[in-house]
Amino acid sequence: MSDPILGMRFSVLFLAGGVVPNPLDIRFQRVSGLSAEVETEAVGEGGQNLYTQKLPRGVKYNNLVLERGMVVGSPLNLEFNAAMSLFKFATSNVLVTLLGEDRQPLAAWLFLKAYPVKWSTSDLSAEPALVIDTLELAYTRMQALRV
Image: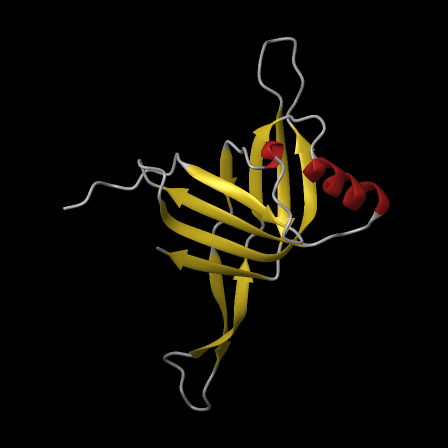
């Protein structure tokens, strides 16, 4: 019997134009939104009152949400700033990889044509606490990869 897989070792890579990612833009403390759902439409049949047929309409994806401590001088921050301030969007593919204890990939999720849709910073307080940036991306498609 294999050990349970822990979700505490992972990597995030932004694959934009084949450029090697900046080391500041690969360190995240939390990733969420790894889900896809088939939307269905209920269709009634004439004379059938006990049930309806559920037909698939399409696939719906949640936004990819990345959290990290605030970083200064990050190219990813420049992309988010361009989207939020200038309404200029540059898409990139994003690869999230779950790693085992030996740092070998166990699973991965590829997000195609991702672009910024939300950027928020945690509240500031007089009490000592890490400032957290939350970066949210929409994308056209997610491909789950199992190693």
